[in-house]
Image (cartoon, rainbow, N blue to C red; front, side, top):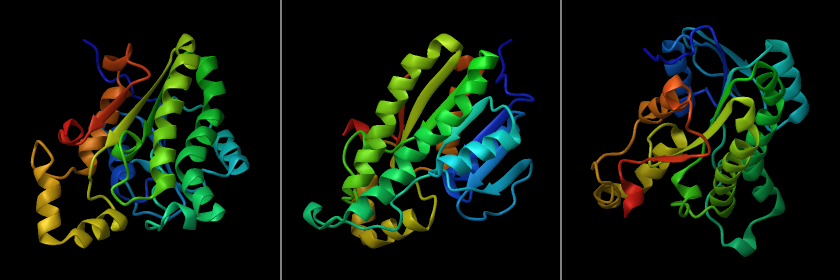
Length: 245
């Protein structure tokens, strides 16, 4: 019988201080993986997860960290976000604001992937899952141009690396979450809508509810399992059916 196939394998998950990244780390522990979680913030302790502070957009720091933990079988790129930004008309967006969001979402995914791929190639097996956003397939609800662009870039990088790495036994897939109340930023966004705005958002979701971090983590559970051994280059919208509308 095919199982998850992760028992004893080493997983590296970025963005584990809270929310979706935290749930992903917990799910991979449940599947038997040895999990390393990294984030720019110090998160709450997670049973079975070794947590470290790391700027995943810093290429030198990422390379050194991967060398310190050894071979990585599973990589989940979950770090990212809006970096505390709000919408500004595009002509008012500074170079620094643009770069901060692109680095957090897209550059970090590239840097982390580049660091672990040599070991995966040598082993002839690997699983990479990138956590993008519904904004990468449509538009940013918060109107942040760099966020929508960098999340779309993650989807493009997923396709390209899946095409390049499949011959080495490495699959690369992507998840585009819908609205998930997973961190202070998403909670503040939700609160800003007020009761009427919240009701309107939920009405456009087929399942009539917002998501939870474990809704996304269970997608990672599938993509990293042996059941998904012939699935690569895909972007799965986990959004309660919102992307249909």
